[in-house]
Image (cartoon, rainbow, N blue to C red):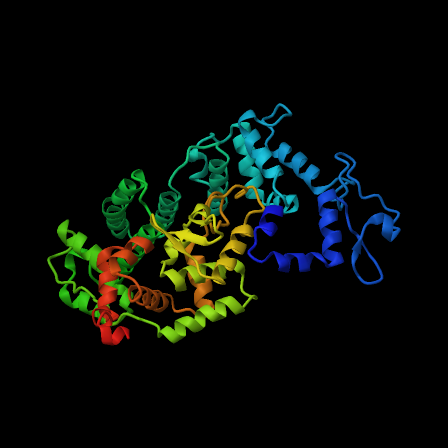
Amino acid sequence: MHEGITAQPHPRSALTWLRNPDVRNLLAAIATGTLLPGLDSTGSPICVTCAGIPADFHCTRCSAEEEPYRARRCARCCLQDHLAELLDDGTGTIAEFLKPLHEGITAQPHPRSALTWLRNPDVRNLLTAIATGTRPMSHAAFEDHPSPRTAMHLRELFITHGLLEPEDRNLLHFETWLDQLLTELTDPNHHTLIKQFATWHHLRRMRQLSAAGHLRWGTTRAAKQDISVARDFLRHLSERGRTPPQCRQTDIDHWLATGPTTRSTARTFVRWAIRNKHLPRLEYPYRKAATRPVLDQNERLELLRETLDNQDRPLHHRAAAILLLLYAQPLTRIASMRTDQISRTPDGETVVIFDDQPVPVPHPFDAILQEHLARRPNMTTAANRASPWLFPGYRPGQHLHPGHLMTRLRDSGIHLRGARNATLRALVLTMPPPVAAQALGYSTQITEQHAKHAGHTWATYASYRR
């Protein structure tokens, strides 16, 4: 905390803030571990002695002065006892292999939130089953649990604390989702066909990418959409009284003409099914986007101004908006950024690295990024105590889900694709497209294409530059 406050760009504002006596008293109380249950005549919090409160708020076990949680004991001592009971291996002690988990959970800054989480019967039962050996200490222990979300969270917590070997979370989530989707298919022919398509077309490639460390959330998201639309296409055939081998061109034409444009993604499944002789040879047209949304540069600048001025928005949402509106970064890449990608130079300038080249962050946007770096969310539980992510997520060891950022930035009025295209076109007008590609992590083909649409060729003429 001391380093974060003293490193801010404007120390005079911090000194002014520290003149507030309430701030000084509260910081001193936090540093000394003193409880402030009373109020003085001005409404400022004061300690037990100054308030004249006769009650004793010291924990009967650790002697810390805190609000009692149960039986005159603080929340942390209660958490240690309750979790030790759940992790008991049957001998009255914590199972040896689960001690790192006990230490990690009980050391989190807010023990009350952990106690609330442990009220979940699925959490308690699963922890007890693993501790007593009813369930094996392996990834298989979490695969057939009746509460998949709880099991997935605990599995990731075990991975974070070194109790299980790391596995690709994107692949784990996809496999869990696929199993759930297959159980919902009542037609055995549809079940077989979708399983084959998912396994041999998508899952095989995703496992190869995962083994090379290149599997991304966007890949799994696209695969889910392909499989979901393929399922809907087969249902469409059933409603028209046809099986896949009986499919006709009129069925495909009717499918495309009577639904949203997302139905065009069934082309991947149809071509795969034709190639493997599950469907007759038919034509499935390729859909090309009619327009490429681009915001006006004035609209983009207005969004940047609103991002700076609107302090009611969460800080991490403003930081993500800056990375989108200044550097045209896709939200999938923003969500997976690490803290070491933002740093300070010896002369105090803030820089951000997207590929391998540091890019300066102009003032006052640098202050928002530095403040976010010092106050990252989701850092108060055992899931993310030492998270390397710039945007830590809610799940243990994971960054914030890109879908979360997409929803929040859209709700704030930002057209994501339009803003990214507008930013990229503005950047390729101020620097050569190959330089922009190297600095922003894009391919040269993409930046050259945006430069062409932005009129970069004409912008190099002397009369235009003047």
